Image (cartoon, rainbow, N blue to C red; front, side, top):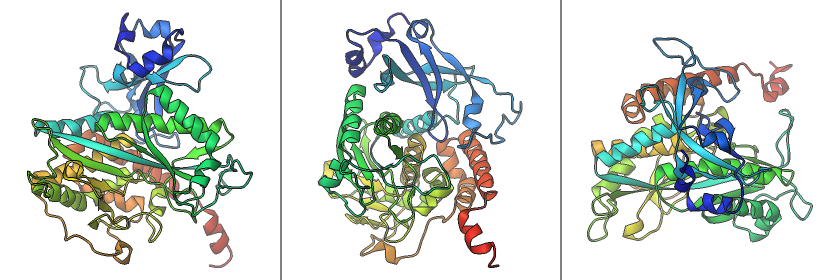
Length: 453
């Protein structure tokens, strides 16, 4: 790999220009979306084509425990995977004290086959299924998150950070430029880090929660955009820490505030013509457009366990609180779970508003595209377009993680798209997390049940 630096993206080359590279972080996303891997000296990285990690990193829960997701034949032996660098993902780690690059790696087994439960491989599998049908998926994620005061005590409620004015961030200030200015130093670092990493931000806005921001990314290839969200989560956390604050991507960190979503916009292009298949020759909506929506409506309940992966995720789905409660679809209506934004025929797209920002971006995008693909494959017709306030309707999605996992386990058609091995491992890991949560006695139970029942 002596000439590996020649394969770096322009932003990484610019970051290193005139400087000596000290270290390379070789990383892979686990199921929760945490970066796992190794940091190696640049001189050693240049001499290796790959490195090893145990496959057990995909069996690990968010708390650090292990789901019993061992190899069905060999047992829990923690086999080594082969991790190969994807140099197109090389990007700066500008918050470090030395000159460091991050490189996302792809996970293979000893025969060179993709590891089925690796989140990046799951998304690549779905993208390939589109390509086999002559189609190219295009997505645009929106990232919502909170900047909050430091909190190292789990028993203490999360509070908004103190802004430049010396006051806590205020709620109900959606789209306020003054509210955005309160986080000016944090936002400045987010922009600086993103520029160093070669990422283009389409915009930053204040959302409805106290200290809640949204970053929009330009549309593009699903794997590339998932890589960017994966990187952005770390980038944003590091920017907040520089200013004595935490960035949190919990779906519902503060009880009285709206939750944080990762809305996913999709359009599908014909590879041969480059045209958006959601629009016909005269600019009208096509069967594929309706079938994609129908697929989301039919299969999304089973995919919720992937897009809302924790017990906290389901606290976000509250009426009149900026999160959907059902799978109604409508044009330019933010109360529905599936929204068709205003656009011209070339930009016609479908927005999935159900995914929480606590999701793994690879898996959430893969699951959303998988539901739409099933709809197009099976020519699924959607319900009639919803008119009015969708919060007036009944809930159509699971209310707790356990119910969501039951639906996921039964969805064998979805498993075939995402990969049976992924579906097996994911269910085992998530059930281990859910079982652990059920063993915890909450403050609410102690307050209201201790002496009253």
